[in-house]
Length: 56
Image 1 (spheres, one colour):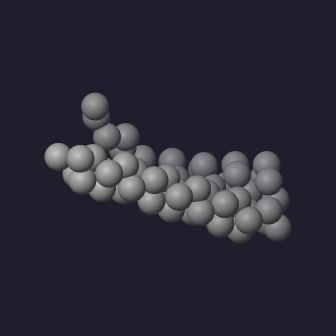
Image 2 (image 1 turned 45 degrees about the vertical axis):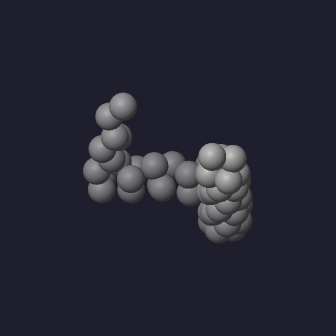
Image 3 (image 1 turned 90 degrees about the horizontal axis):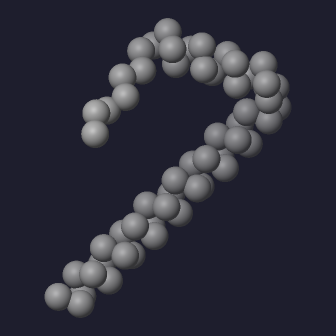
């Protein structure tokens, strides 16, 4: 699987589109929700890995 290469210009374009769609008031809330989701996913993946290591 190849990593996705996103340049600075593409990243700025994505942020501007998100700002236009969601507005400046909702954007921080969306960022916080995305961070919490990623944190929970990492925690669950780590728990599964720890569980598999205990079974061995």
